[in-house]
Length: 104
Image (cartoon, rainbow, N blue to C red; front, side, top):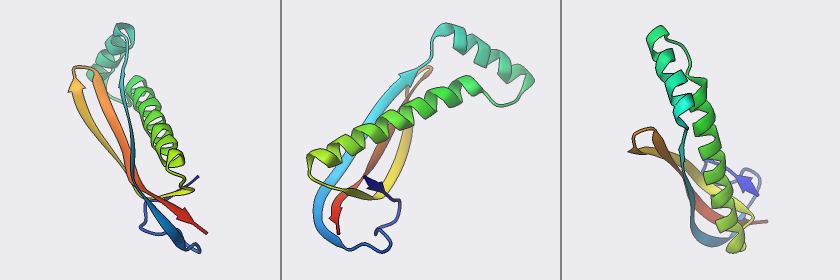
């Protein structure tokens, strides 16, 4: 599956538009990692526990978007974007979305 953030795939011609595709994931960390992250806010620095959580959520959302595109017969996704929001304390939603297409 080709995934691009542009509105076209360089060197390829769009043969068919398959439609809007998306995938989302909501992730949270357990209390032990939340405590570790909270302590890091005191001394500063990168909070690896949340980086890991968000990376897992991004990958799950992209995987689900690709599954949606595959189910529509697409071989590429153009205009791919990622969005995020907080759905509750210590939990984040990541959504991946784009336009499924068939390219030559």
